Length: 377
Image 1 (cartoon, rainbow, N blue to C red):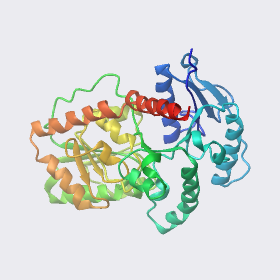
Image 2 (image 1 turned 90 degrees about the vertical axis):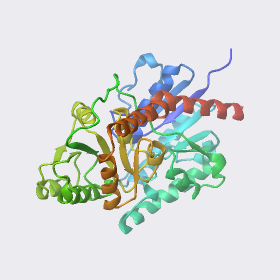
Image 3 (image 1 turned 120 degrees about the vertical axis):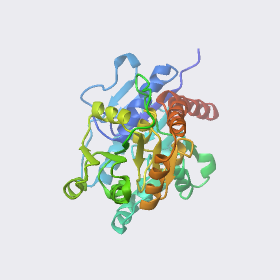
Image 4 (image 1 turned 60 degrees about the vertical axis):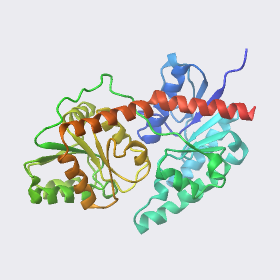
């Protein structure tokens, strides 16, 4: 009987015990892979008090009591990677799937079996001079990790190009594995494609990097241009600019929902007609995939991996920092007939169903693991 392939997932935490994109990615990917029953899965994380996965999934968990020695984030990540490295000594033959900085320490000794996922590459996309200076240490560290890892994961799109600028032998080292979501338990059947007013939905932080200023300028200008009775803008989220806009913008068709729980958010996905995200930089935003899973056409900036999800078949790709480009996209959708709107809507759902569910993306990971194991044996 052949020995089962073992993969050790190294992460700083697992959602919801620790909240964040990497942590949610870890939980959903690991759970989906466990359901295939084709791997021996180990997860190293910092939740030492109790196991976090359902016992029926038969996932081996190694909970580390994390030692924090410094107020410096990067130093603490290095210290944690030292603890992770000690635990990895117990799995000398396993493939290692590393999230973020988790295998930084002694990666030169284990890199030949490491698949490194750096996620959204925010440190290569800083906008201000201050943020660019802050990003330099991250670029140095990840440059080193990229050089030692056996494979580096790209979410796709422009992120692959960013990685290629910083990785030798990039064509053989980079592997594209996109982000994913779970589809709604029951498919939402969108019946009306001619709502008046047209409802435009934004979900994200009220921060400059999410393009909230671009959206507010576009909404204000379109109102002045005669669209006040024709459009409703529904904005979900909070952040540093939330108080500013809620206190200065008093248009009745610009509605600030603040934080929305899952039930409220799902209701808005169902009630609205098109989703907008004029973001300035991204990885592969799951909020876009969630909107697509409710058959919403998408307007999104050409940044990160957004063009993996959206093109002219299911929406509009707009220029970064361009109010005009956003206004043009909304206007173009507004004048479409019902059949054209329905085609965009149906294509959104079809694309996420075929390419960006966890069952599909977990299978791509499994194929990679099997390929690497066979070449290393």
